[in-house]
Image 1 (cartoon, helix red, strand yellow):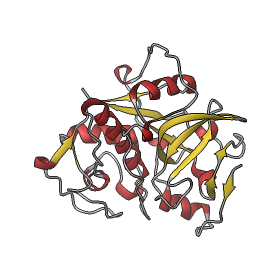
Image 2 (cartoon, one colour):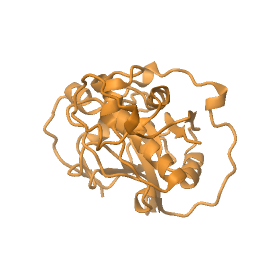
Image 3 (spheres, helix red, strand yellow):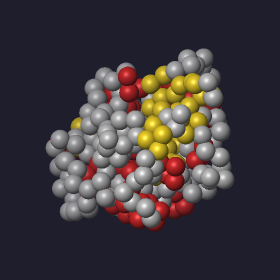
Image 4 (tube, one colour):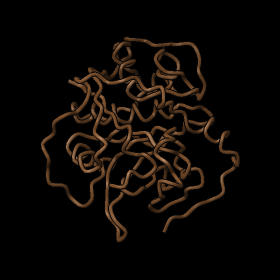
Length: 257
C-alpha cells in the first residue's frame, strides 16, 4: 500500500523550485560514442539492491537548493568508483554546486553535464574535504584533495528491461523523474498513470540502486536526496517496465577506466 503525508510546501512551483532542480529540456545531445548501443543480456534475479552491497553512500539532504542533479550524478560516480576500486567514498556535491560551470548550482543542472564537469576539473573531492552548504558559493577546488575521477559519460536506453540488466551488471544509474508524486510520498510502491505523472515533465534527478517484485508487479528501488526522514528512510519504490513518471527517459552513467 502506498502511503502519503501532507508536505509543508503546498504550492507546486515552490516545491519544484526548492526540492527538484533538473533542467532536462536543455539537455545537450549525446554523440554516438556516448550512447549505449549494444549490450549482452543477462539473467536477472527477482530482487537486487546495490545499497546492500556497499556501493551506495548514505542518504543526503539537498535542502532548499535545486542540486538534485549533483547528488544523483555523484551517487552514480560513487558506485562506479566502488566497482573499480572496492572503496566507497562519499563525494562532494558542493564542489559541483560551486565549480561546475556547465550547470547552474542551486538553480538546476543535468547529470551527464556534471560528469563532463568532473572530467574537466580533473576529478572530484570527498564530501568530507569539501562539505555541503546548500547554497552556491565561490569555487574552492583543491586538486590535491581529489579522490575520484570520470573518463566519459554514457546514455542508457529507455527500455527498462535493459536498464535493469545494466544496473545489475554495472552499478547504480542516474535518472530523471517527474517529482509530482514524491511531494507527499511516505512509503509503498508508486504506480501512477501517465496522465497523473507524465513523462514529459521530468524535473528531478535521483539514483536507481536496485529492483524488486511484489504482487502487483516489478518495481525500482530509488535513492532520493531529501534526507532520511523522507519516504522509506530516504528511498522510494516505483513501478518498473511502465515508464512511471518518466523514470526511463533520461538514464545516464559515468564511465571510469
